[in-house]
Length: 394
Ligand code: NIG
Ligand code: FE
Figure 1 (spheres, rainbow, N blue to C red):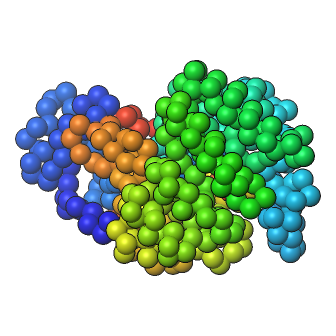
Figure 2 (cartoon, protein in one colour):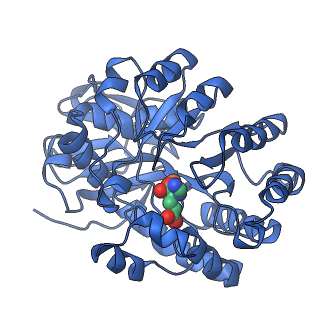
Figure 3 (cartoon, rainbow, N blue to C red):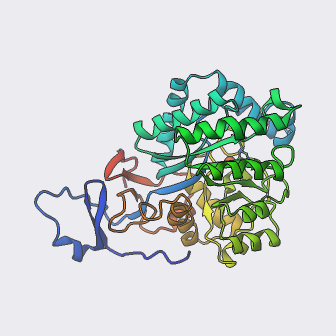
C-alpha cells in the first residue's frame, strides 16, 4: 500500500474514454500526433480519480438541526431513539418524488466531482418500503446516466427497522427477503446488498438471513459492522465471506484476524467518527500490518458523515489513524476499485483503464492530506472528458 509507482515528469496518451499509453514525457512525446489535444498539467500531481466505496448519496432534506443538537450535548443514538436520525431522513425521503431526489443528488454529484471523486458506491436505505427503496435505486440509475460521476448501486433496505414495523421486526426482515430483494434483483437495480448490523438495528441472525438471501439472488455482499458498538459484525462478515466489512470502529483483534483469513476488505470511514464527535477511530494500522487491503471512504450521508470530500478523509487517516499519505491514496483509489469489482477498469493510471483522473493543484502528493480543508483539484476528467472547470490558479 505504500508503493505508489510515481512517474516524475510523466505523461499519458488518452484515446476516447481510455488511457492508451503511460510513461515519461520523453516516451510519450513522440506519440503526440497533429490531431491530439495537449493538456499541460504544469508539473502538478496527476492521480486516478478517487473511488469512494461507501456513500449514501440519495436522500431528501438535511439534518442540520440534529447537528446543532449534538453540538449541545445530545448523542447520535439518543436522537435516533426519539425518532430522529435515519428515521427523520426516511420521512422526508418518502415524501420526495424521484425527480426531487435526482435534483438533490445532482448537487452532491457535483460536490464529489469537484473534490476529485469519479466513482461512488451508492446505497439506498432511506425509503424502507418496497416502493421507496426502488425509487432511490432508480434515482441512482438516473444520476449515473445524467452526471459525469459513476454510481455503483447497493441495496440497503436493511438500514433500519421502519417505525411501522418496530413491534414486528420479523415481518420487516421477511419483506426484505421475500419482496424487496427479489424485485431489486429482477430489475438489476443493485450490484451489492448491505446490512446495518448493530445493537438495536439488525442482529447478527437477521443480518445473516438477509445477506444469504441477497447472495442467492446474485448480489455481492457488504456490511456495516461494529460501528457504534461491538456486535460481532466483523466475525459475521468473515463467516459469510462478504466482499467488505465497513466501519469497524469497535472490532477487536480477533475480528481483524477473522477478516484476514476470509480476505474481507475493511472499509474505514473516519469522516463519520469525526463528525459524530467521537475519538474511537478504527485500528487501521493493525489492519494494514495484518496484510488487509484497507479501503478509505467518506460514508457521505446526512447524519453521521456529511462530507463528500475524500481529501478530508485522507487527512483524518494520517492524523488520527497513522496511515501514511501513500497508504491513504492506495486506500482511496485502487483498493476500493477492487472492492467494487472494478480493479481492471479504474483506480490507477494504466493503459486500458478508463481515463478517470484528476490534476491536483500541487507538486507533491503528500500535500493532498497535509493542506486540509481546501479543494485541491485543478481539473477533473471522467472517461476522458473534463467534468469540472479549473477552480484555482497559481
Ligand atoms: O454509515 N450506520 C448507518 N448508516 C450511516 C448513517 C446514516 C444516517 O445517519 O443517516 C452510517 O454512518
Ligand atoms: Fe454508512
